[in-house]
Image (cartoon, rainbow, N blue to C red; front, side, top):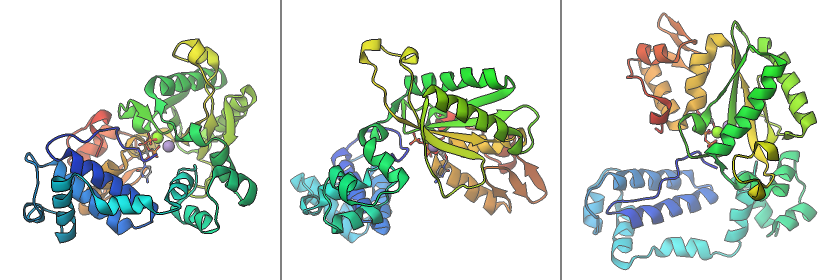
Length: 335
Ligand code: DCP
Ligand code: MG
Ligand code: MN
């Protein structure tokens, strides 16, 4: 999970970057957001350097690197190791915390609570913990839901949904958004944007959603619904799906039914431009676009760019234009 491109650190500071990224992840597991941010900012600075940073003095002169990070940089450059990282990793129960945090739908506080209750394995959770429906799903399909989906499989899953959609209502249009639309080689989930010519509210699409969810569930393609508290209102459906063997893009003998996360997002045609921006992301790109809109006295969300006498929801390119941002193709929107 996380939605980042699978990029390996490279360049003169690759080793330091690698260990700092691992440290950021450890702090995430400890719920220390401030520390996560400071390591991430330092990584961004290090990525921009063309020379290897070897002393604390050199490091401290760079943006976003304070004195303690600077001394860690020197330690890594001279010893090749990062003692603080090793210590955190060797803490007892760290393994369990990592395991529990990776359960789909489980946040750090819940994982910490389970560790404090003495649970150490997924079996402990199954037999001793009180699990929500989502957490049961996460535990029972632990490996599947952690595995990224290869691009060819995202496409095959999308094509299957499109075939079924066409038999229900040929005027429905389905667009795979998210990391797939940005050209990612693999995705954490499938983000299916559902729209239709002439639609002006999500109500125009909700009958279709009910129908396709029912049809795909009967087929065995959809295997579970996922409860989501954040977006009530019936304009979304979150769940899991499994690619049928017949649609598997590789050699049939290597097929395995893997549970994948899929989201259906209902978008009226009048809002498709703003929705495409939002659901293509990435999240950092979205944040910078929203910030820019605010600076110009406007507001950008998943429905429209509005304010200052402007209202544009329909046209993705026009939204860029009004904001005065040069058009960026989806694959150029990694941040
Ligand atoms: N999004 C956002 N802010 C969030 C969550 C999501 O702007 N906090 C937007 C940008 C994302 C899109 O929604 O690109 C889809 O969300 P996903 O969590 O599915 O992220 P991605 O599809 O980008 O990555 P992944 O491959 O992990 O699914
Ligand atoms: Mg996604
Ligand atoms: Mn998603």
